Amino acid sequence: MTGPLFVSSGDLIADRRYDYARGYAAAGDLSAAADLYAQAVEQAPHFASAWFALGEAREALGDRDGARAAFERARAADPQDRHGAALHLARLTGADPATDALHTYVRTLFDQYAPRFDRALADLSYAAPALLREAIMPHGGRFGTMLDLGCGTGLAGAAFRPHVDWLVGVDLSANMIEQARQKGLYDRLHVGDIQSFLADQRGARATFHLVVAADVFAYVGDLAGVCAAVATVMEPAGLFGFTVETHDGEGAIVGAKMRYAHGADFVQAALAEAGLTLVSLMHAASRTENRVPVPGLVVVARR
Image (cartoon, rainbow, N blue to C red):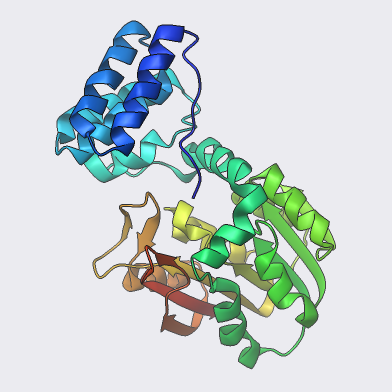
């Protein structure tokens, strides 16, 4: 996706050791890299980037306890958790972080990624907007209002713009919103958290005929909470379409790429809890990793 986030320790020696460690890690010598990361944090105990990289190296070496300790130190050194240590801890401990605890990480990640987002997703055979359009359009040829949750640079907006009269997008990343704004697709764009935005719409009594979330819930563990919030801003008989990465087990898990995967039963339970009726659920890969399709679901529900 993008290079690792680096936040200087402010100590030249510690930063140099971090740089040397990155070189060893890139060459495949993780033991040497871990030793140098450990030296860097000994030199600068609050060096969040080095603690995080040490956690990654230890996890790759099979030292789960050591990795967990390093990720905990990374999160303590950077309370905003811009590196995403909480997601790694979720994989190692099973303790699911609250979605709002990941906001700074997700915002930082996509602010960095925005200028080359469209090009990078083309390389990943990204198909979520097209899959959603194919799944949704048989149930409604034209929509008065559409809300694009986690709109990013506007790829889903581009897919649906010919079929909607009024298009609204919201995303955590200001840089992604700026990319979307330059395309001139949206009637309204907002930078902010999905849940807060939905609460604001509910308070303003704003409603939508169609709500779409393309490849957004890879960073949301509380799917039931989002579904419930979406239901409150949908027109009667309105449609909600979204994609998720999936797995064969139960519940939501954090996968190897630090993205949530949701089981099919978990998705259906979240919709039912929100009072939404499942219209269709299709297994389909919306992207690839290392040229291998990532298992996913394309879901359409109705209020």
